[in-house]
Image 1 (tube, rainbow over the protein chains, first blue to last red):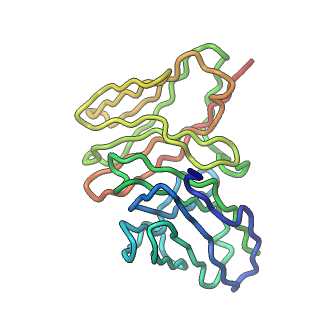
Image 2 (cartoon, helix red, strand yellow):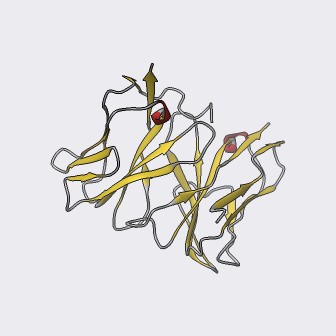
Length: 114
Length: 111
């Protein structure tokens, strides 16, 4: 099993550009989520999905869109990048909701918005 | 990554000694707690968890202690090794099924 994979590993954008961060898991997990991590802070939840076709907002959803058309994939879209979105982005998955279920994290995407 | 962990509290421990990392959690309704390890340039990795109906849980070289009275969580690492060098996060979850992460502590191993 590859676990949770993320692409790209690094990305530089200009303000106003859009892009999609890819996330895939091969563990047949129902629950997937996106977090951002800023210096000196813990991870903050952006969006999550409890299964294919179902998504919901987390703590910091503004400026991001998600969709879940398959169990395996959970892409994160930045609609119009802003410098405040410079961060490291982590995708995670678990068998079911993260309470009582181990979350597996991807290696992260480091995004810089100029 | 190298930018993660700036301004984090740091614990320096001699190799071979025991490490104790502390965490204060915020929500008295939280009933599930997790410790994660994050090495430089990698995603967080699950270490150990504990439910609120327990006050102690042991894993391989790690022990988590939960004190609900003062909302305090600790992670003990026995016989600390160079590979334990990382940032450690505590996290909590409750009825809303969302994980709230703490800010993290950097563990530095002295040779």
